[in-house]
Length: 156
Image (cartoon, rainbow, N blue to C red; front, side, top):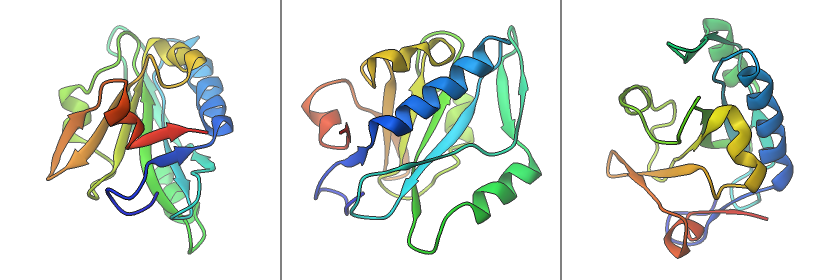
C-alpha cells in the first residue's frame, strides 16, 4: 500500500479467493476465521497469512489467534513485506463488533479491516458485500461501497 492519500491498497483477486475458501471451510463447521493480508509496500498485496487459531462455533461464534499463531504472524513475512489488512468472517451480516474494535490486530494509521459476511460467502462477489473499515486517528471508520472505499482499497 502506498502512503496514505497517494493510492489505494490493491489486493490481488487470488488473495480474496484464498480467503473465501478458508472462511467457507471454517463456516461449514459453524466457525469464524481470521487472516492478514500482506505484501511489499507500493505493490499489490499478494499474500494471505492464516495464523493458527482457535474458534468457538455458533451460537457463541468467536475466533482467537493462539500463541503459536502469533509466532506464525511474526515469521511469515520477508523483510520487505508488511501487513496491510485484517480480514475475518462473521456468521451473519458484516460489521465491526465491539470485540473487533477492542482487538484490532493492526494498529497503524491507514490499516484496513475487512469483515466478510455469512462465513465467507460474501466474498463470492468480491468486496461488495463486505464491510470495509480504515483506521484513522485511532478510530475505525466504515467505508461504504463507492468512490471513497475505492480510494482506500481496490481489487485488481
